[in-house]
Image (cartoon, rainbow, N blue to C red; front, side, top):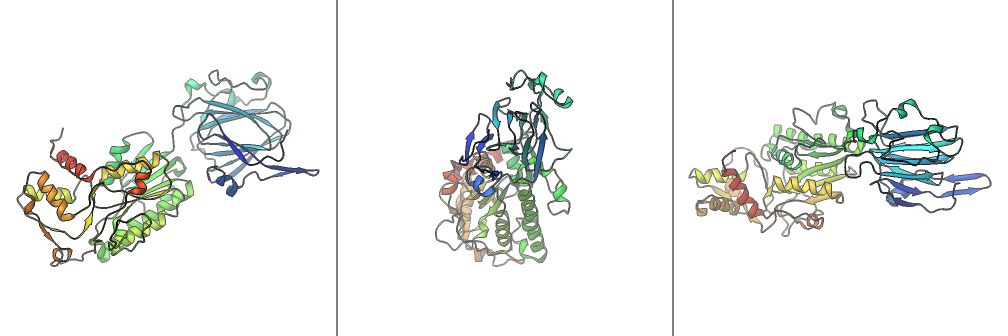
Length: 475
């Protein structure tokens, strides 16, 4: 019987993410009223903001009508408009709680949030029962579904009315036992820009798991008009954007400016629209170039942005776009080093070839190794850290480019005095092509990331390990 006057409250169940909700129902001589779905109140009380797009009603004439056990690739908010049900839920997702069971009764004063991949079934306990559910994706014949037999002996659901005595569809009778069920895989992670330095580091961090996909520009053009239908995006939980235009000097040319805005803003805007539309977490990598470098203290995530050149302007614009996505992480980095061509490899090569370089000595920052960025990406995702902006660099004392170069010479067994320090203005005085302005202070404050439990790698130790690995013979 419907209970009136309850306060909105939630109760967790043994199945992760499956939560029972008590709903306030107000009644008088005319009948009753309830707010079956009230986004503002319910999300404030802890319900995931799951973004329902479809409302379905299943009307059942007779007591004992039994439906299920179906697990769909979307979330559901289940309630009852009239009548009463016995509900049964079985975790059919990959993981340690696969096969876990929860049962309870649902009437108009109760509801339950059913996460993607949890099997849902019910049996009517009163005639003329209307079973109502909101879902956050449109039904599709191409979606992946998982089913379990209502009479499975392992789940051992204690149905109030014996299954032999109730109405069950032929399809439900034919569903497999738990031992034969294919668990529902988690929503996938897509890494775009997989061929770049960061993309390769992300592949090393996430590996070749079945729920992680990697795409190069040729495999997925982010500026193509068909991007919105290039994937079944609802199957993805995370997009990591490792693609970027990073030729900071070439970005100052007319052609480079167009290319930089296309790759760093237009493409990112397309990803942001997809992420927002499908509830996807968007991870984006930004840069110290969003700052003008005039600060005399390290930049925090909240420091005002003031990019000096085209590259920095495109990265700042992309940050603003990504920040509109409800689920987003923006990782700001500086002086990135990874596989392929970079400053450290260049200095090591000059040292070994006997060339004495002139290196700027009035820009200060820390190196950021792509392995640390990839590790930070995984950390933020797996710890469910608060969405927002995080600075990610190596840890330790900051230095200038000239100091880094000297350390590279030293670690490769060469005389660091061979590195000649010069000012930025001196270094670029004879440049024939446009030169992008550089921030003189690129030091990023790491306190916010550290508060999540992430421990950045010491920059000098990472540099030594990087050079050691670079010299090691290939297996």
